[in-house]
Image (cartoon, rainbow, N blue to C red; front, top):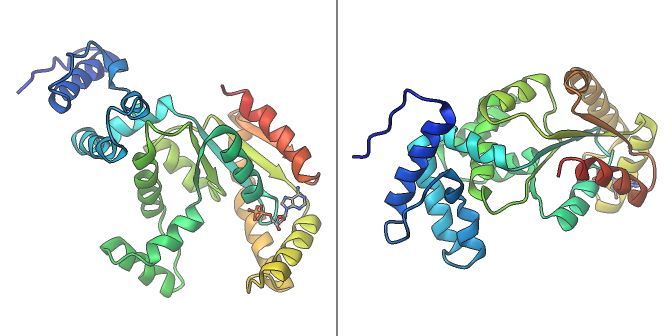
Length: 263
Ligand code: ADP
């Protein structure tokens, strides 16, 4: 069993651990010399390993080093939070950002919906909670986000968290368990314009969540929970306020200027 002297700087210890793990996982390859060699994305890109191999390796590293490995890998990636009220254009802008930058879209709402259909302990728990009208606890949501993000680590240009965090507790927990975002894009839009957009979206898509009363309640809930989140990131100088009342293309130009600043 390889021995690692843990009585040193965190980076040095991690470097030795990386070498030990790498040599265990890739015994037939040249011995590695440092942590940069552990960039599994290079293997995938060069076609030396299939994506499923990469996922197995990521799983093994997660199993061995858990949250420390995730945090180290996330540090090298980019994490962008996209916040704004319902109808502010988050989904629309995320779609365009994915096309332009190759980010991975992480939508907590969609992920929870998918979990509902899964026959697992977690799926059952979420079905029970939502069935009783309870909210899904932050730690379960974070676990789902962590699983999704882990499965793309090393192969993505970064993560776009659409509509996250929607309350301060989520922001704090994410930072504690994963990392601080590079930036927080705030799509700023008046309640009047968001209402107009949601009404026409629900007409076009025949969605049942689009009655004026439902929209009003959703907006009230949004404003109540969002205020502390926005203040929190403004204080940390991470908030990029975007005027989201303009056309989709004009909004996208502002969004890209902010995103380009983190490369
Ligand atoms: P969110 O994800 O924030 O709820 P969406 O991206 O789904 O918002 O947008 C809500 C509706 O508004 C959609 O029908 C979308 O086509 C429209 N929309 C989005 N951005 C704009 C914009 N800048 N100008 C006009 N309509 C927009």
